[in-house]
Amino acid sequence: MIWVIGNVDGNSYKEPFSKGILARSLRVSSIGLNQAYEIANDIENNLIERGISEISVDELAKTIARYLDTVDSGFSKKYERWRTVRKSEEPLIILIGGASGVGTSSMAFELANRLGLKNIISTDMIREVMRKIISKELNPVIHKSSFDAYESIRTPAIRVDAIIEGFISHVDVVNVGIEAIIERSIKEGISIIVEGVHVVPGFIREDLLNQGNVMMFTLIVEDEEMHKQRFYTRCRQPWVKRSLEHYMDNFSTIRKTQNFLIEQANIHHNPIINNVDFRQTIDSMVDEIIDKFGGESNDGTKSI
Ligand SMILES: Nc1ncnc2c1ncn2[C@@H]1O[C@H](COP(=O)(O)OP(=O)(O)O)[C@@H](O)[C@H]1O
Ligand SMILES: O=C(O)[C@@H](COP(=O)(O)O)OP(=O)(O)O
Image 1 (cartoon, rainbow, N blue to C red):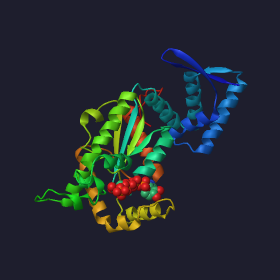
Image 2: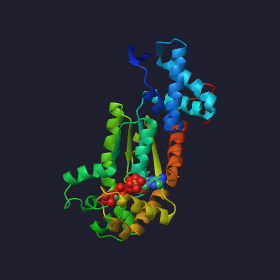
Image 3: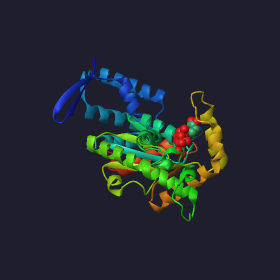
Image 4: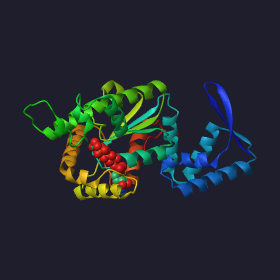
């Protein structure tokens, strides 16, 4: 048995070496699961051959980085810099926005898996809770979708663009819940991913975005036909109850909300990712996160 020795706030702990934990920690370097387990196996065998029965977390991390360097120096750099992010005093709070159907839910799940994050919340769920608290009479727009909220705007006014005005009114309410989640995550030190159409650049308080390790992405699907296909693939899953018709009937307004999100992301210098190939999307988000929050790798470089 190999024991891994760690230290939390001056208190040391001891846990059995786990190839599974090691393999999952390599995912951040975009190493496939099979290769990750092979590497974990090789490292375990190397420790056994060296007669090591106890190793500190930091020494094990150095052993892993040295091994990764023999496979691909980019892997070891990304691994080392990711460890810097994870050793931060601040929780990692990732906000993923994007119009309906672009893939915010799927990419949130993939990113959480790649980074080993355990908490994901969708803004649709935040909205459901708010719908129970806020009556349709008090605020009808919250009881609609983001893209057809304009049908429930009550205040008569000369509208520049009713669809975007409805979207803004709808998002504005859910945004209160998003800010509450960010505040609690920072207060409690909880790393989390918040995903959904209601994550809009320029709507969330700057003082929250500037705290700790908070990062926002805007996902888009540039190609209109590909965007439409996403609804087909989503609604094909037997457990999905949302009607395809609802999205196809409102597809043009959904695209209008995407144009608004792109405008907002450009105004607020927020990274926009065209979510075509999910591996590239995840790699882009991981690289942006490590670039922003990761320290330098051991050789003093920051390039990944
Ligand atoms: N990069 C991608 N490549 C292929 N399919 C994707 C990609 N991202 C999402 N999808 C698929 O598109 C559909 C919509 O994705 P989803 O995450 O539900 O969108 P959203 O949460 O933004 O409404 C799902 O079936 C999902 O599997
Ligand atoms: O309000 C909206 O735009 C969508 C967002 O959900 P996703 O399509 O992003 O999952 O919620 P809906 O009312 O369609 O359930």
